[in-house]
Image (cartoon, rainbow, N blue to C red):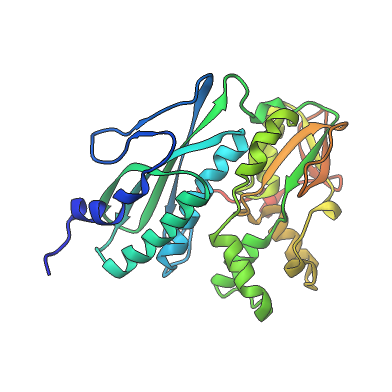
Length: 309
């Protein structure tokens, strides 16, 4: 059997995923060409996932691929953007056709689920890492920014928090959840929701937004800093899944929910007189001042969330 090089791998495994409404020219030329809807602006974001840092060693290829697309799609949702396309760059230590087939399966599921056709990218030799760049469209001058919050607004989150951190701790053999909850928690880490369906409705009601990647308190802190105000969180209102609600170690559950990260739910602010969107929970409020507090206690130490350095 003839050995595969990077060009044949790209052709055999990635070329068939480029079809989408925004795709004018997909892979094969020096650049992809996208069609931007009339009256809209381009939103773009790029994230890199590295084995051993952003996902455990030995993770399945389909889970890695899905997670890579989903986490980047979450950035579009946080801005209120609708998806257009994605670009994928992969570094592989070896060309393993079985792994590539698995990886491509997860990739195909994700680009379809999040409407992010794959229009280009790169393949190189090296330690396993995945870089995804996503493109989305926004009504001109209407993107959700971290700097838009005002004092006197409510702070909300979508979904439930802490599941992904608990799932990662399970995958790293740091604790053992009930058998019935293991698949759910692992899935919450590898296959986040990426709330694109919520994004367009938030453009009409939210003043600021961010996706929860590094931990609730750390990411809420970015809104507080950018908007030059203080945010107060009520830990008793943090939404938890049944899998975490039943655990006796409430301190550990709170730590996962407040600073564990990887949930990729949306946190946003909006005027207090607006109706709470379905699937979202009010967890606090904005006020004058600076910084973030939880139950009136200033956040210090380990609860600052994930940092790369």
